[in-house]
Image (cartoon, rainbow, N blue to C red):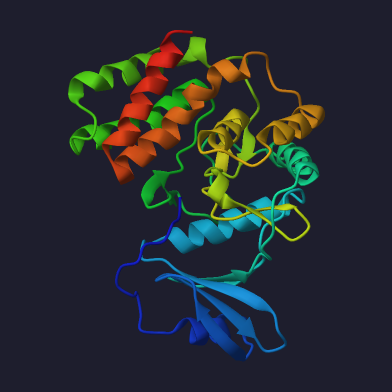
Length: 295
């Protein structure tokens, strides 16, 4: 889920001038990629991406998240060259294709990232805002010590309420999701330490370079349950996902019953999608809740 929309410019500054200002280097050429993205070649040939955000705090959250992921020293993330309230400049990831060996290596890297941990469930990256974003949806990083209670109150129910208020989920239908939240202590599986999450790990936020290695972009980083990242990879499909999971399990074995908990961990991103994109995702969320309750 992208954090950027194609609305009006927060300023009249061009991507080229932004790149020059935030990197301190001359610009050779600019190639628009979308209404909110441009590829910029800096003097000397380095390629960067200039991104624009309209939402207050979105750039700060993304920059802090990328820095936090990079600090773990496991996964590859593009280097941030500079940012301000509305603009972010970061390295362009070279384009390639996923490989089975690269996917397995990514699984090991992801396990190492999660193992670096966080201060609490919901903890934002150091220097990151409490009022962050997942895609275009606001996401509050309020902390908690108990994953089932925190997941219900800070990740599932806020988006359920927004979906009900918008009419995307009918009030009578919401009860099935509420029952999942009530039963979360029994449904959550064994207690897990707080993991350092990418937080929006759908397949579109995993890029593969010319060597078949994985790079992560557009995080909604926070402290959470490691199975949530894995469930998001499963939600929209990830190349060689079985090999990703093989590498992960070789590094940090998962608790028994993980596959039975996938739908539970997908409730959060599905409800975010329901808020952003409508009824189809609401129906998927309701099916996920029903599946979880049938366990």
